[in-house]
Length: 309
Image (cartoon, rainbow, N blue to C red; front, side, top):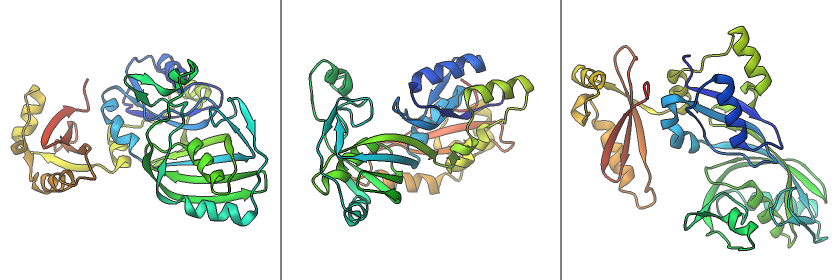
C-alpha cells in the first residue's frame, strides 16, 4: 500500500494511543506513529504516519495547529478539563475584559503547562506523579499564539479559535485567560481543526476508513504528497549519491547536487542561540523514487531513507 500518512478523526472520550492501535488493526500494519496526542476529552484531527514516514514525526509536530475551545468561566478543575475535580470561584468577566484578555494572550507568551500533562521530570510523567499525590508545577516555557478569534462570548463562557505553536496547552491558555480578570476557568470542549496543511474536513473516522479500504477507494497519501504539505526544503541527489543510496552506503554532502544553499542556511540557523533544534531537508533521486531525510543537528549531518524501513 502506497500510503505514508492518514488524517484520522479522534472522537472525544478515547485516548489517542487507543485510536492508533485500532488503525494499526484496520491497516494491518505495526509501524504507525502519531504527530501529537489529543487529550481524552478532546476531539479532532490526528495525523498518523505510516512505515518509514514515521521518521518525519518531529517535523510534523512542529507544524502550526488550530483548535476550537469552549472555555467555561467561574469553575476550574485540578486537570483544567471537564474530567477533573471542580472548584467554583464565582468571578465572571465583562465583555470588554474577555476581548482584552484575548488580545493580551497573543504572540509569544510564557505558559505554565498543566500539572496533569504528559511532560516528564526525571523520567516520570507529571500526570502520573500528580495521581500519586505528588504535585509538581512544570517549568514555564514560551509558546506562540499565532492567531486568536473570539467566536462567541458571554459572562459564563467563550468559544475561541486558536492557531498555536508546538507545545501549547489550550488548558493552560484557558487558565491564563481567566487570570487576566482574577477568575478561573477550564476547557469544557476542545476540537483540533487542523495540523499544518491537514484539515479535519479530510480526516477519516474509523468506520469510513474501514469502508474505503473494503471498496479500495482510500485516498493514497503518498510520501511525495506528505513532503509537499510539510514544505520541507527539497534537494537532488547526484548520480553517485543515487547509487550509494541504492546500495545502502553512507551518504555525504558531496553526494548531493548543489547542497551549499541548504548547508549555509543550516549553519546560519544553528548558530542562533535561540534555535537549538534539528533542521531538515529531503534529497531525492531524479526519478523521485528515492527520498533521503537530511537532519542537521549541532553541526552534524545525518541521512536516513524515507522510502524503506
